[in-house]
Length: 355
Image 1 (cartoon, helix red, strand yellow):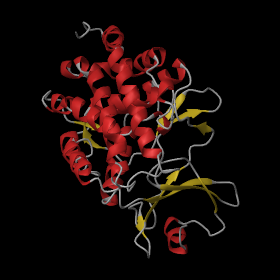
Image 2 (image 1 turned 60 degrees about the vertical axis):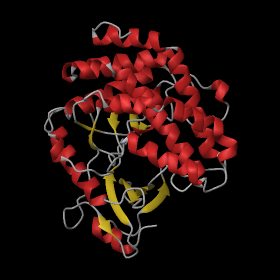
Image 3 (image 1 turned 90 degrees about the horizontal axis):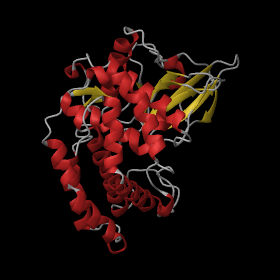
């Protein structure tokens, strides 16, 4: 819980009532409500996962100012600047805190429930990324160096396999072999020569806020991972979270597959908002982003399981391997439906379908 120093820094009184908010795997988040009913999101940034919180906050201010200048149809969560204007504070125990505007009358979901929901979410992400298309990537800093450097992550994964730190390798050999067999997708992405973009890097549907009245998506939140990267990775994360039949926590892999209507919904929302700024190589390879990010996420869950669950929050001992197997099933489903998905993309991108 925040100390009096944190309250004083942001100008809050100690009668601020705090209750846990959200289900994020990384940061600790509370919703604060004052005696007058004003609400604020107070977060303790996980400095093990995010060792450079000052870079996160630098990027937040840069992106906030840039998007504000665009007059986009998005609600942008403002930062509380604090007494020194930086917007973050390290407390006496070394914890890093920030306070963000709470967007009233909104809700979030863990996975898309219908195509219209995926369409609205896709449109918000596309609008967000298109708004950043003319922001020089050199303006932002690497909040997470090597975040989507999948070739490097793959080498770390192989080391985790070899070390078998938690003694779990024998039970997950099938999944390890799958990652090794499909890992060529990482080199393929590396060789495409994709343009460097300012991207969100975590545009899962849980980070999209919907208006309670209209049910339209109105905001993309959780900007900690913003840095230079590729539109393909953000599209891949959208597919990963907006188009499956179940969320990544579903333990029965027979239930997990890509829902084509949800996929087409997110494409219908995403593509028109961003098509004009996409280069030919991005248009032609968008679906590769899904293979890239889903396999990378599977590898990360599996590697964390082999290492003894050091990174992701878990609710039970097998949680990370359940997540990894879930992602493997989703990847396989996309492989099976690849031709149909390419045709959907080609129709909305107004290009010829990639063979």
